[in-house]
Length: 376
Ligand SMILES: *[C@@H]1O[C@H](CO)[C@@H](O)[C@H](O)[C@H]1NC(C)=O
Ligand SMILES: *[C@@H]1O[C@H](CO)[C@@H](O)[C@H](O)[C@H]1NC(C)=O
Image 1 (tube, rainbow, N blue to C red):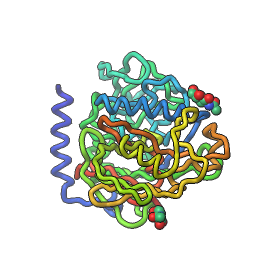
Image 2: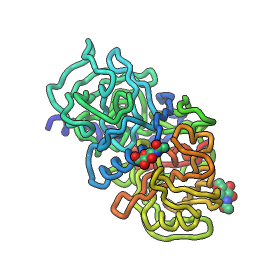
Image 3: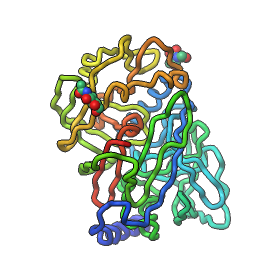
């Protein structure tokens, strides 16, 4: 009860304090953290299995969504941020689809001089059992805040990573409140509750690269071109509502319920759009890879419209690059799309990493909106 009251009070303070500020990197201070993009996948079916487990959790309205939940597959495609907790360094998954911060999945958390047990247990949805709540100094990009964390007592599906940095909307959070973003703001490290996310595709045949960046408290204008267009965020996730789709010259009207999610690998589109996507691009669902497969390279662009703004992916942006086939267990002589069927039930569209590598994304809690701009 006490924690709920505290967070409500904090939210009021935050909203009152920052409403006059616009998001711009000139409104220092901002905190920057570089990312590592890692893929340890050996078979694309495992990406699909993990994404589908996650999508089912979203559809079930589960408050806790964790990468790896519902599957024992120990392979990951993810963006990782180095996070110091107390005196230990953890590799955490960057996750805008959940809001709790968790450690201890691989490297065990050892309580130190800065840690304080709250005596509370918190539910863990990956693996089995429960975790324990601690408050400790959590530091990213050189700035430390006092933060409540969940310490996993058991977990699976993390592929050797240590946990999650939850960057979802604060309304999604259960336990471990306030969120890391709220603490950065209330502890004076940033002046507006805005997160900018820059992802970039792996180049050549690399399976790992230092190629992304988080900007806490603003955006990094060197990471996108043109301007950022904003749309109201639809609770409880970082939700968006596209209402028009285009595959080549075919236009479709109809609404989708989408989530901008850094923890999903592929791009999921509603079934009614997916059917047209297969027709318009000349692909078929391939059971052995779980992906859409083509004999001939498709030429149709795929677009969708949110709030009057069109977001387009050209074939080279929705196909797995040939140089990456080795990392995905794919064989040459065919083409594969990173676009999959999101089903009918809401949410039925996920803008995952494969989309976010071409679009810079902005998560603005202060103004309850989501921004997208073409990545540079
Ligand atoms: C990948 O996994 C799927 C499902 O388990 C299997 O059918 C397929 O043969 C596997 N592919 C490779 C290249 O091992
Ligand atoms: C496809 O999209 C790309 C990138 O947005 C654009 O440059 C190109 O003109 C589009 N092609 C067609 C046929 O619309």
